[in-house]
Image 1 (cartoon, one colour):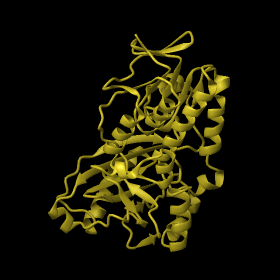
Image 2: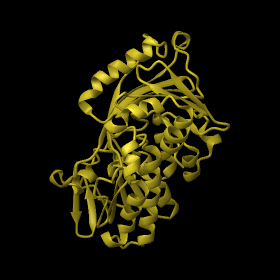
Image 3: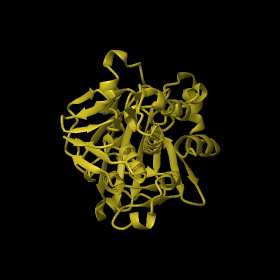
Image 4: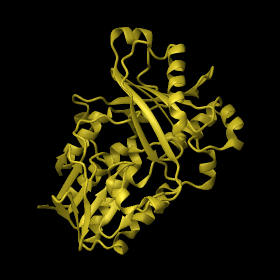
Length: 368
């Protein structure tokens, strides 16, 4: 049986960020993931300058053979709406990335030992250690495997899980050919966001280099298939998407962090990223919360100095709740949370340039 200091289940941004920080502190880390990398991932695919700083990314290095599209504005409207609001910034406020490239890069850069194509089918607590798949043993376990993370399921029994806000999404990412480009021109510097009229989700169209990502997410999973069809029809009807564009759809589900919905700390155990349900309720953004939680999980583990009791790790849970639990006012106004009272006003405000810039973008999608 292999042994390590910390075993991380999930090699996405949360797991990779945690492994990278732990490795820099001198700990031996193993990352297990059921997928093989590069992998597809449902995501519009952009990161903010804060993510670049927090991960200390060398953007010049990253650009070599990878997509890194500067975004200097957004176009915002309603699905089936007849107008949009454009907001421009003086400097890049986000950078478009392809998750298949970004996730593989972060995992490789982490320096951790990796076991890919290995689903964690068995998770057992053995005295002061965790044993996964009867193959890897460690005193510290980090669950970073997304919404369906097996560690999250193991420490959050179904009957003990509180009612939560589950978002479901579908997306497709494809490379443009000349015919697509002529039929559906897309400005690379300006992603487009289109909110559902019920204000319980939104669609996007994002150009990243020679790739386009389209997708839509909303709270009620029963409404997603007709919503996707309506959104695609809207894009095609308005000339925003070619009828001939190659599309292969992928699905995904995750929890929003209002409040942090899952038990995230136990003896020798932490949950990070979507496994902890940390996506921002205002936008559904999950990359930065995943990275922030992965980095703080690593710091909590290092500070615990080998004594991984729940009490020693509890400050991680306190930090999560202070960092990610939205206020009641924010939850009421959140585009991803149904708020019938606010719908008529909010729909009108989505046509107001100042509101879109200050509230929807700066506080929702680009929050500092």
